[in-house]
Every structure is written in C-alpha cells, then in structure tokens.
Length: 204
Image (spheres, helix red, strand yellow):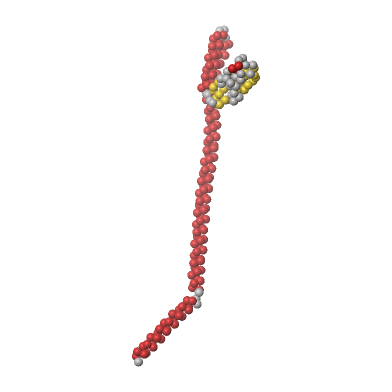
C-alpha cells in the first residue's frame, strides 16, 4: 500500500515538473520581445561604433590636411626667400664684375693721360712712340688677364661661326682660295665664347 502511494506521488511530481518546463519553453517561444531588444542593442552599438570610426577618420584627415598645408606654406616661403636671395646675388655679381674691370683699367687710363701730357712738349717722336707702345701693350695684357682673347684669322679657312665676310677678292694663290686674306676688324673671344666676329676679306 505504501509503495503504491509513493509511486503515485512520484508520478504526480514528474508530471508537474514536465508541465513547468513546457510552460517555460512556451513563455520563451511566445516572448519575441527579448530577442528584438538584443538585436536592437546590437544594431545601435554597431551604428555608434561606425559613427565613432567615421569621426576619427575625419579628425585624422583634418590633421593630415593641416600638416600638409603648413609644409606647403613653409616651402613656398623658403622658395620666395631663395628667389630674392639669388636675384640679389646676381645683381651684386654684375656690379662686382664691372667694378673689377674698371679698377683694372684705371692704371691704363693713368698711363694714357701721362703719355698725352708728355706729347704736348715732346720733340722726340721715337720716345713718344715708345711710350704709346708701352701703354698699348699694358692695355692688351690687362684685357687678356680678364679673359679677352684676340682671334687669329688671316690665313685661316673662312668659318661663318667666327667670321663675317666683307668682300671677296681673287686669291693670290690656289692654296688661299676660300681662306682669309685680310682682316678689316679683329674678332675676340671672352673665354671660349665669341663676343665679336672678325670682319674679313676672303679669297675667291
């Protein structure tokens, strides 16, 4: 009898437990709000993270833009300073070059003035000629020292890059045809550059 009641009570408890479990499952299945809340929270978090990432990207871009703008302004200012400095140096170089040549020519000018003064009362033509020759020699040497070099043309083949033909005359010999027979005006180099073409007479 006791065993019969015990089994009956045990069966009732098992049924009650199973019923509670079924009710709990039904409540979970019948309550979709819980799932929706979790989904909405996840979506909001994702949107907030995306917005924060976008804001960080904008801030990084603005900082990079400001840095590049600052570099550009610095480079522009440095380039303007370089142009002004270079222009000033070139002007000063031209002034200095002209001054150097003038200083070199002043002693020659002094010699010419002394020679002219001596010629006023000179009776010896030979001494006057010797004095003029000395001044001319000094003048030429000064110019050569500054880079001026006379062009040797007579007897050379005519070269349009160096010579300017004034006229043609019959060549005195076969080997002088198309060669320079006479020089009307001497040509000059400054360094390796032709600064004046020689005016010449060419044999035909």
